[in-house]
Image (cartoon, rainbow, N blue to C red; front, top):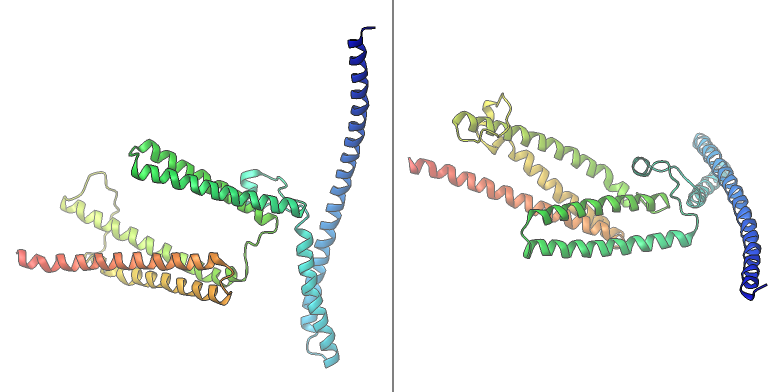
Length: 316
């Protein structure tokens, strides 16, 4: 038998032995996976059952809080243990599969995105920060190029597309981080949430008023023959709107000062937390810049309107 054939047969024999070992290892791996899956289901079910019973006993503790002093001490101990146990369950659930939120369900479907080890969570968080930094620098350079060197709509469309992809990807990655235990709603967020939602509702109301006002202005210009035929409008412009921005100004200025209040509230929250949450400080700064821009723009518009109004009698 030729030496080459002998070497081939020996090599194939070694490969067969390794293949058998790989098959056995893979069989054990699948068996462990099945065991892990069962353990995960058992843990999740037990935790859910315990959490439900903790809620029930919390209600009972509140009803029994008017008893003797000795009972009161025992109830306080139970309350403290309930709090610590809730935190312990939160830590346990961080390493168990959980249902995705609405956004991830719409984008990815019912796919498990839970990372089951601290090393995996830290690695994903580190890769997320690197991606955000690299993408931000790339978009900054591309925006700089479009602003100073390239004046073509194709490049502007590419920039807008890249921005859309960046923010969509960022939202998906942040949702995965939240699923894996990243804090979506800290104490500062909860403290500011209702105020911000109320502000958003008010802004929507003001924008509806502005839309109604602009439609009325377009209707007036159309009646006077001073507008383009393609401008959109609605019928029914009210007579009390003919005075211009007067009816809108109180709503506009109230919204502007609400932005200022939001900024000061966020600055105060950042100071109370010893500036540990830098995002709160940046949000406060954004609200302050937003207030200054909107306020001074509105003041400039009002000043221009008054100046043009005072000049009309002189021209006549």
